[in-house]
Length: 95
Image (cartoon, rainbow, N blue to C red; front, top):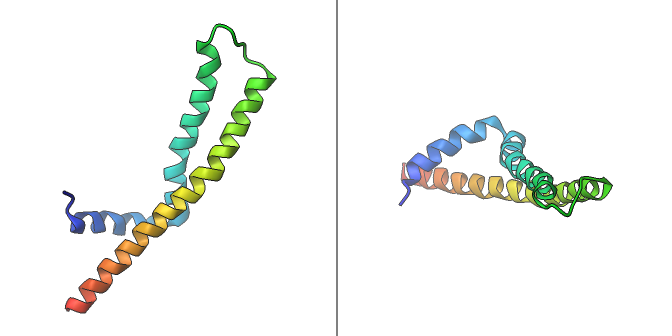
């Protein structure tokens, strides 16, 4: 089980960097994974050669991934921020 105080301290340091940087740091690895998966797939299949269709597929997958990944990253930021504010409010009530 995670210690909530350690998690809150880590989030306090993370939130100082800002929402945009968090979203980018969270999204870039996922988008790079999409690029690598779509780029390696034709290389492993002997039937396919790299061409305009694969490039088009890669770009569409990247766009589709971006449409999904960025809002999910922002939702994670929002959820953690909400959790942090509730935690800080409960500490304020105790003191």
